[in-house]
Amino acid sequence: MPIRNMAAAYARLSLPQGYFDQAMVEALNTIRDAMTSHPYFVAGTDRLDTVLMEVTKGKVVAKLGAEGVYCVGIVNQGIGLALKIEDGSFRAIDPVVIQILKQLNYITDAEFEDLRHLWRPTLKNHRGDEIGHLEVAF
Image 1: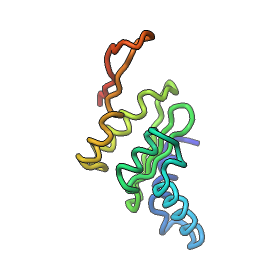
Image 2: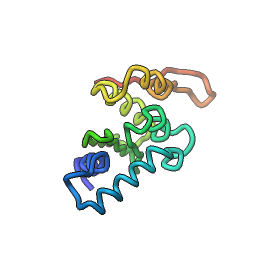
Image 3: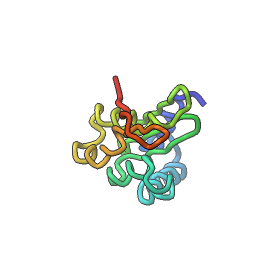
Image 4: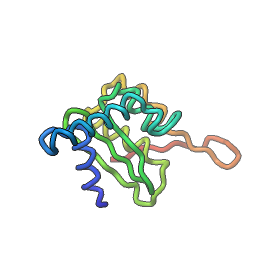
């Protein structure tokens, strides 16, 4: 599925009214509300999906995909974002997603502070020595 279609899918998940019949709207609202109310079941402990939905108190719905794909919906705004890390690596996803949400003002300063530990991850060598950090440059 093209990345733009995934962004559209998350836009519809975030606000399905006007795009589907009432039964589908109710189903999508139920799915979205289940994801944002119980984010641990979406991704597990200490994963960006979980932390992002917890920190924003359900104002963001998010899910990691395969091969460096990440999708976000801004709940009740009909906004969907999808990104793909070209090499398929996952290590850049957390900082990039958080930076995008921060730059577009989809998270507050307080929410950003709660996500900061995922925004600028420390890099370590094979011995466990700290050798730097990842930094988003855009």
